[in-house]
Amino acid sequence: MAFFISGFGTAAWAPLVPFAKARVGLGDGALGLMLLCVGTGSMIAMPLAGALTARFGCRAVLLAASGLLCLTLPLLPTVTSLPRLAATLLLFGAGAGSLDCAMNIQAIIVERASGRAMMSGFHALFSIGGIVGAGMVSFLLAVGASPSLSALGVAIAIVLALLGAEAHFLRYGVTGEGPIFAIPHGIVLLIGMLCFVVFLTEGSVLDWSAVFLTSVRGVEPAYAGLGYVAFAAMMTIGRLSGDAIVQRLGRGKVVVMGGLAAASGLALAALVPSWKAGLLGYALVGAGCANLVPVLYTAVGRQKAMPEHVAVPAISTLGYAGILAGPAAIGFLAHAAGLPVAFLIVAILLLGVATSELALRAYMR
Image (cartoon, rainbow, N blue to C red):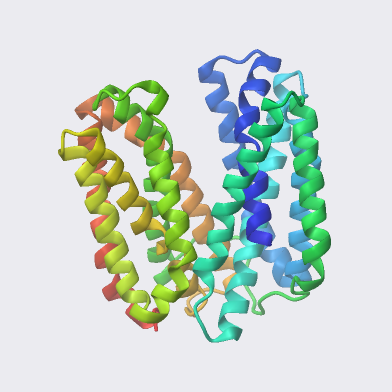
């Protein structure tokens, strides 16, 4: 439920962006800078959330972070000044980042105690929550609800979900000494770099798949979103079945096959001059990426180079950096050499993810 709330709350903001933009009177460039506040707030809050989880337990941080989402989300479509919007987005991002950190720490604890693969199922609920959150707000807006009322409805839904789940949140976190923030090193740095590549890939598909299909493959703008739909659908299906796949194949093979599938998908979309091949390629990317991050979080729970309450925020921060930097990097590469070349460069990075299994093998059993 914590994963569902995270996906639900953060995705609910997406349909509200145009209303916030219009109310404050932002241009596209200024809006882009404002949206960076969400990622900035998340990256600042994650190390602190890890330390607080170690001291006060997962439950306290999960409740506080969810409460911050509930408080800030209804404000986002109502603020009327640029400074207030920036401050609200920073707090909203801090809530989302803290929730992301605490829920993954709890997931590591629960999976380790269970003795079986569970992480993919947890992350599947994040994906489902995102679909439901964006869909709920879009539906409410379509039937005439105001943006503020729609956001308030999401906040109420989160509170109701918390009422059913909070008793089962862990009242403890991981033990161990460590600073609030530490530069990742050793195997944690490698895992963080791999998360960076996977999140960069996801951000690239989110922000550039529609542009690619319209400008390179000639798809009508009304259908350009099908690329991300194919990606998101296969990612959700892959995560729902991911724990069974991990149990059958092992985590190492999931990393190898996932990296190869995602790389092949981007190469297919970039090299085959057909919009149908593009859709198939994005579906392959979704299937390949689906279980990479869950498996990498499990590996973090098995390493001893850094305490978990420091390591989880470290790799989460690197992952968010990939989400923030990826779309911009793709834009620069596309300007210099074209979108197909930009996607092929990301595909090469994904091949590196596939070969990383050799270094991660000790943490994949």
